[in-house]
Image (cartoon, rainbow, N blue to C red; front, side, top):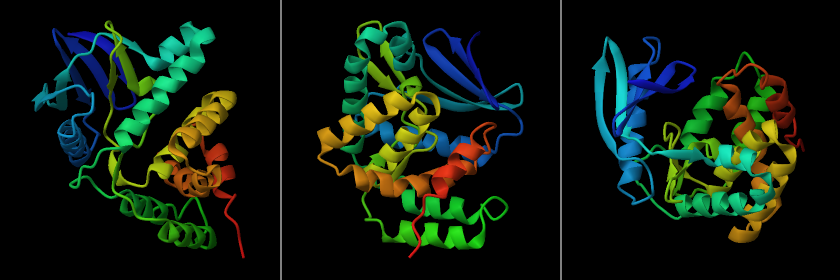
Amino acid sequence: MDVVSTRAEKIIYRDGDNAVKVFSEKFPKSDILNEALNQSRVEETGLPIPALKSVSVIDGKWAITMEFVEGKTLAQLMEEDPDNIDKYLDTFVNLQIEVQSKKAPLLNKLKDKMNRKISSLGSQIDATIRYELHTRLESMPNHDKVCHGDFNPSNIIIDNNGNPHIIDWSHATQGNAAADAARTYLILTLRHKELAEKYLNLFCKKTDTAKQYVQQWLPIVAASQLVKRIPGEEAFLKSWVDVVDYQ
């Protein structure tokens, strides 16, 4: 098998027409099985995603096998062809709207997941801020739209025929589309502030959503992202958590 990419705690290989994601021994089995379950449930909605083939153990390590998609990520295309970045951004937002048009009632609920993450931040955020975050989250409307949870250009593959495929469904939930847009905005802001602003303006225009509504989710989403403890992100995310308004 040929290595396609290496990520934290996992390596993705190509094996003929299959992509095989092999996890490290430290990766929780429950998270691996949940990712496979998420992908199968989203696959049933008809969205353009690689077909799940199997979950297995390879040389003592858990692995997920799925259809291999030949092509380039939208992130690669944006970097290689910056003159057409607006075209790629339009494709990106249209895909996210398509995802959010679907329902998958058996997916975990986004607000439940965020509540758990905020509660787990005792060592990073003090009790007063956690209380404000829980209160704000509870006040946000309950929706049941499919939310990717990590929707960014590196998780979109454009195949050799120009067709898009959405990958990496490990964080998928059902919930509020504005929360998913807020997470995308934060991810883009970490790498490309100008692109993030263009993204948010375009998403809000296409969905007729008030920008302030998406922004209300930003402290909540930033707090939930802190759980990952990604080097270099903590100070940035805490600056967004501190945006919480106090009465």
